[in-house]
Amino acid sequence: MVTTVNITELENIILNEFPYPIAVRYQRMLEAKSFEIKARRGIDVYEAGLRALTLGLLGQYIQRDLETINDPKLNKEALSLITRPASLGTWQSVFFTGLKAYQGHQERFFMTQLYDFYWDTTVKPHRSQKGIQRPFQKLVELRNEISHSSPTDSDVFQSIYKEISNHLHTILQQFLFIVNYDLIYVSQQTENGYIYDIYTGQSVKRSDTLLKPQKPLREEWCYLSKETGELLSVHPLIIFWEDELSQDQDIRLPEVVIYDSYQPSQIKYWHSSAGKLETRNSNILDLFVELIIERLQSRRPRQVIKGLSWQNMKTGNPLQNGGQSKPEPMFGPPAPNLDFVTPAS
Image 1 (cartoon, helix red, strand yellow):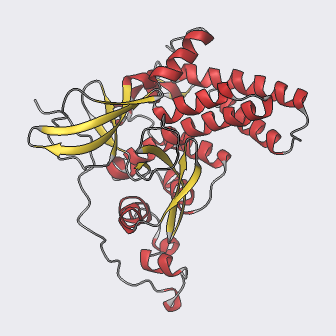
Image 2 (cartoon, one colour):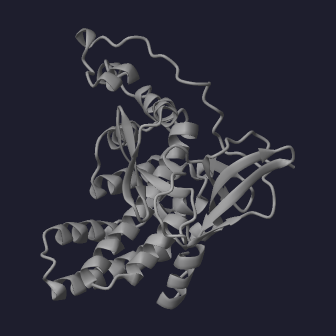
């Protein structure tokens, strides 16, 4: 059953207990002076939350469950999302395709409540909840309406913002369980464990305790943590950006940035206040291809992925050599084991 709170309580929870990328954007929406900006920032809140949940789901699927679930439709949609610019509607489609792919695999979900959000588990086989996608689809439609409205139409934007706010609150009410999970940044390994920062609400705080997982973690990587102590890596789909991007001293760096789009020579991430940022860091690019693209390619039919190698993608000519791809090199060290990390007993 979904917990319901009033709007004042809901906003307090969003601003203080939701993951940093959502909380910061929600505050920016509240601070906006015009209904046009409020409406646009309301869509930003929705998109940030949708992307974060979708990327968390894809991170789990690609790095942990690909062999077990191996859903052809999700494989196709995920590879398209990752390798091509994607609309808000595409992000929404991949999110729900991912939820559908896990039907009957409730035990594999890192966020167990996310399964219950979509599936009615009171019947067998489990079936999707009625009307579950309606507010999501309405926000996509409102986003499209905004793009065709003139900034001078203040009455129009006031009405649009009211609709966006109502649908956004409906969705965030359904996702109140997210407060049980922390977005953490592993900053340093010591002899006794890992030092880490917690990105919850609009602030970042250094944990008073050390992480002591059974499996090694990576410094400067992003993980989801839950109350049991289990961890799920979402790197490199959600990363921490360490360059100084703002003179605003209230922004503590590194900043959480969310995957936006991929090109062979760069990856773009979405910063909560600075917009779209690009990185040409070869370590991130190589890791992204190794952990995400190559794994999805491995599940596609051979004739579909023929010629789509990392080397060919780097040259921008996927059909060179007569369409014959060369053997794939491995980049950097072997990929770490990215299953759930459980706390040491």
